[in-house]
Image 1 (cartoon, rainbow, N blue to C red):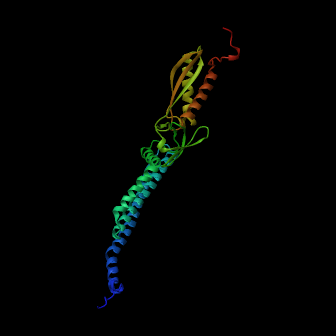
Image 2: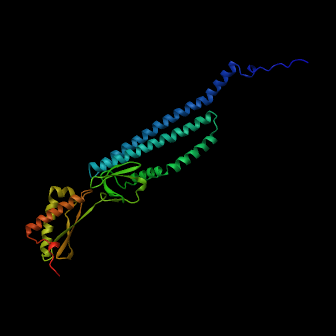
Image 3: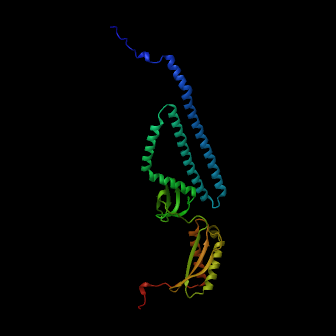
Length: 302
């Protein structure tokens, strides 16, 4: 019985020349494709950044040229443009490198189906865990695109009101009239009341004694608001001469006269204070009687 010849393991391995040919063939096909994919991803990323930078420059210059209310509005538009640009740059980089990584995995022979399935399950889990964060970011993007408010605006967001100090993709920072700083998540903003957009109207009610002559009061107030509108403060705060609408109410021995004033954005509160002071000085100088003051500690018996 003849012995069975042993099968050597070394004989199953390719020789040095065959291994070199295999490696050279792989490098000339798949390796070259990987290099091309990486270079193409770098070129596309640089091109995307260049286009986004050009878009940012155009939008910033256009906002600077079309700004009518000065430095604050220009800062507001610049902040919105820079924030959206940062978001676009990050999103473009993620998309480009994700596609490039999948193409490289395909060239390396890695199975993409299990990888995509696991990535989909992981993304779904992360999405459920971070749905509030995604909601805040999407709401922040829409707030900036729709320009509902910006830095320097005085807004009422329901839970808090104040001057907008910063707007990011996740939160909005307000400073209220008493100095409190509020941080509000963009996803929790359900309504926005903006008193700084368009032409705000200041409503001023001036009270005098009911026995005062209404025609004299109207003439005195008309002269007072005209003089205030011609002053440096009024020229900066007002968009025209305020209107004395007339008697609003007569009750309790007092007559209320209402004044309307179209104001520049954000100046309605200062204009209302200035107009009240001007009306008070004019009425005192004209000798118009003030409304009666009731002394509750010395009420006559009924």
